[in-house]
Image (cartoon, rainbow, N blue to C red; front, top):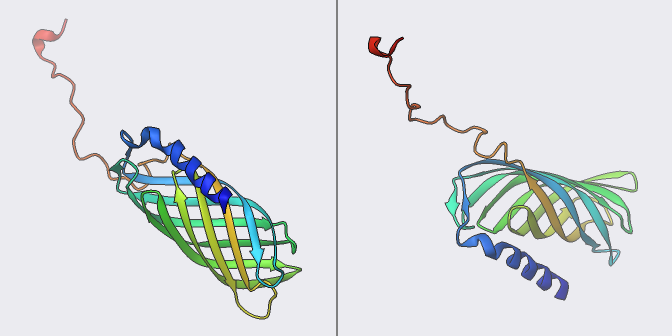
Length: 187
């Protein structure tokens, strides 16, 4: 618990210098990156390290400061280094306001050669390129991996080339025209 509080404090300190003058432009953003953390399984009372990748496509109408609303979709895949070892993935919608968000969706897992389906819900505290999160996954059917709690850190890069360009409406104002030529201006 102490580590989580220190990590949240570090994220807040990283975000503070630019908050007062920050502006988030309207647009669609592609974010991708790595996920590191830990997982605990209910029946095994054990935990393990998780590593993986995540991608998000997010729209924001833009705002001053770090309080812009956002909505999008995510997909991730994780290697659970156990015990027990396995692979999990999830995908679904996500939404938030400023640095706080939530996502929920379908979760799939492969443990010991068997596939399990379930649901995942996650809360995040984010500054865009970095996020702390807590996720709960529930898998259906006869499995020893029915409930999994996960805590971690997402480190993402933002594709600034896509910022505001994907699905953006064209500018309504025509560009300034070149000065008109007259017979007097020709040589």
